[in-house]
Amino acid sequence: MKYSLTAFSSIFDNKTHRQIHHDNWQSFEDMLYKMSETNGYKLKRGERKAPKGLKASPLITPAVYEEGKTRANDNVIEWAGWAAIDVDDHKFEGNLKDELHTKYGNYYYVCYSTSSSTRDHPKFRLVFPLETSVKQSSIKHFWYALNKEFDGIGDQQTKDLSRMYYVPAIYPDANNFIFTNTGNFINPNALMDKHPFVVQQSGLATFMDRLPPDVQKKVTAHREELLKEQANYNFEWSSYRDCPFVSKKLISDYSAIAHADGSGRYAMIYKIMTSIACNAIKRKYPITSAQIAELIRQLDRDTSRRYQKRPLQTEAERALEYAYKTVEI
Image (cartoon, rainbow, N blue to C red; front, side):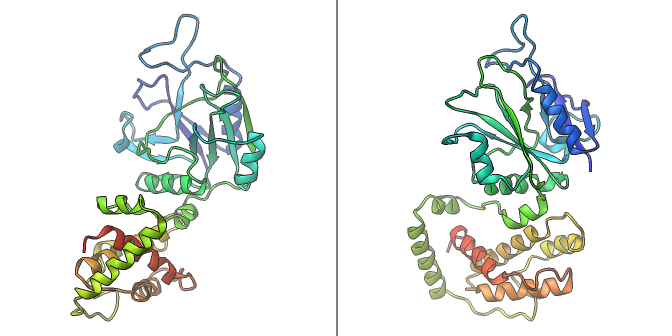
């Protein structure tokens, strides 16, 4: 397992040829600690270069790029063995190191201060070693899952696959620190399975998510009753193969990865569930979670046979809840 990074001389640099590869995590971590002992400077808004006598700190990203291409999301191949979360606004009480360990101590991470960190308001970056790299197609889902796992303490909204981070350093007027918590490396695929990710398809879901939980339940229940009043039961199927609500493309995509390790299989299963639920509701059929779960069991029996004991109906209920929030009735 290699741990790689692409380095940039400044925020204006978009050349991707400066790649550094480490054969193990300890080597990567040693590099971070060595950087933390050097003087640093983060360019301020409007600056193109550091003031006289200072040198702007470089930036790094876990993204590696297609050879000869510039720093752009479309040119990213993967995140090469590590990821990071910036924490700027979360308030901690007491000792930061102890609190992080209490909440997230089962994971391995390097924590280092960023340039605007103060004693009263520590700002910092958590850098995590991964068990596998994350391919470009999975980065957005992995980023979502990582932030979910860490209670949303970082910036959850970023869509930048090429996001850069200033290196650890001794920044002027900052409370500078670095420390390591030893624990488990993150398994990206297990994390994505734990936190399924579906891109919202309409503004309706966004509106629903802003409502109080009890109101959401009442609205969802009302929408279910409304669908039953308009229901079209003129649909029949014998399996997922001939079900009119099952996307053949998604089945083909899943079949291609069903036996591959590190492929985000269950994330695809959940995507198929939500697709079935949405397609059924669009066509006025009040599909049940039991029906969705059975379709997925059939698919699993024909492919990987990995999820026969998984609580598929519970997860199908979540997919249905999402569909009722999203689809206009």
